[in-house]
Length: 133
Length: 133
Image 1 (cartoon, rainbow over the protein chains, first blue to last red):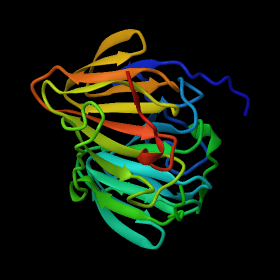
Image 2: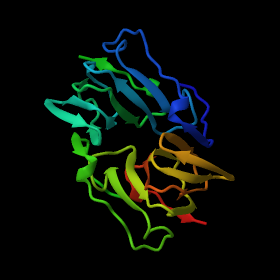
Image 3: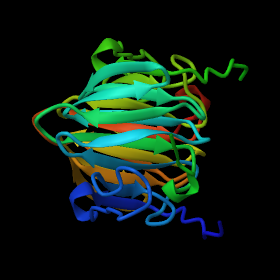
């Protein structure tokens, strides 16, 4: 993907980003919303990219996998995380390392939004190809 | 640096990491403390690394630079950030992209600890060589 590398300073508040959603073909597209905080398609940034994802109470990001490894930093709410064959409770402060091509999914099992930051080793989120089970 | 690549799942809470400090040669070493959350020297993880830094009220991480680009996600407190020739107030929710070799430093100007997450495009924090002004 041809992008100009924007290696320039940025200082920006999370409230000044717009939420994004998608009426897409993938499960969960109509349920979750996200902001691309550092992402070569939206901002300065390269070598890694990150954003925040919000899942409403009862919402699910269905099991999926992708080639790049990923990290979740959960910062609000409580959820049930599937990671490979394991299912674990997670909450604000949980750090998750998801290996390459490893199946994962997350469900909000609490009364408040479940919010997490994701980090990919790609310039942009769009460089990650999701495969749902 | 020879490390075995640990591409294995990890689920861990931030409270279960130990704070690290250093009586080092660099300015600020005795003031700040940090946790290496995803870092090839401590945990599974590669391709990028991240941790949290805490600066007490009145504390300073002095101006410095390094080859890799870096991101700060400030999640608690208020600070004064130097980024290149600019000085800006930052607070919980501020996202900062720091270009390669770009001088930056941060001072806690509030009454509570100033806490931020950093992300580097390196396998580990130890791969980043800091140069102080």
